[in-house]
Length: 317
Image (cartoon, rainbow, N blue to C red):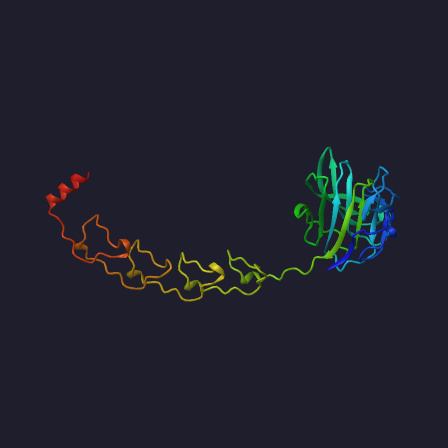
C-alpha cells in the first residue's frame, strides 16, 4: 500500500513546499540540488505537474516528511525528458530525515543523464557528502512521458523505465529507513507527475531446499508445499516422473533380467511383465530377425541346403 502519493494537482506557481500531496507528509526543501551544489531554487506546480525554474542549475532537493513503513519500498514517477546534458530528475530513497546540507544526509538516488546525445539511467549513493556511482545503463529516452520505478530493498536497488530493467546494484551500505525525496532540473520542460511510494510487501515463502528435487519448478502460482518423490528403488533408469505437475509414487514392476532380451523396450507408457519365449537356437539361422513389430518368432525355420543358400547369397551380393 502506498504511503506517499502526489499528483501535483494545485494552482500554477505554487512552490512544492507550499503544496499538499494527495497522501503523505509535507515537502521540506533542502539546501542542495541534483548536482550536489548549493541551491535555493524552488520547484513549482505548473499545469498540475512539478517543474523546475529556469535558472541554468537544478532546483533544490525536496524531502517528504512521511516515514516509510520499512526501508524496502518502490518510488514511481512519470517523467518528460528534454534534450539537455544534465541530470534531469532525482528520486531519493533512504534519505536521512534530518539535516538540510549535502554533507549532512545519506541517500540512494536514481537519475537520468544525457551527454552528447547519449542517455543513461544511473544509481548513486551519498554518504557524508561523498557521492559514488553504483550502476549505470544506457538508454536514450524520447521526448514523451516515461514511467520510472526505483526499487529499494536490502538485496537489490534497481531502476526500470516503462517496465524494462535499466540499472541495478546489490550495494546495501545505507540501511536506514530514511525518507523519500525528489528533485527537478532547472528547466520548466522537465515535468514530473504521479509520484507514488509504496512498501514492496513480504518476501515469498519458498519451500525448504530439502523439499525440492533438481529439475522441479516450484512457486508457480504460489505453491509452497512439500514435493513427495518416489523412493530411489521404485524408479528405473529412464523413467520420468513429475511431468504435468504429478509425481510417480507407486512401485515400478520391472520384468526380471532373465525375462527380457536385448533390444526389447519396456516402460514406454507400459511395462513388460510377461515371459519372453524365444525360439531355440537350432531353429534360427544367422541374419533372421525376430521380435520386430512387437511379435516374436516361435515356429521352426527350415533352412535351405548349403549350395542353395550360397546361390541366394550370391544373387544378393
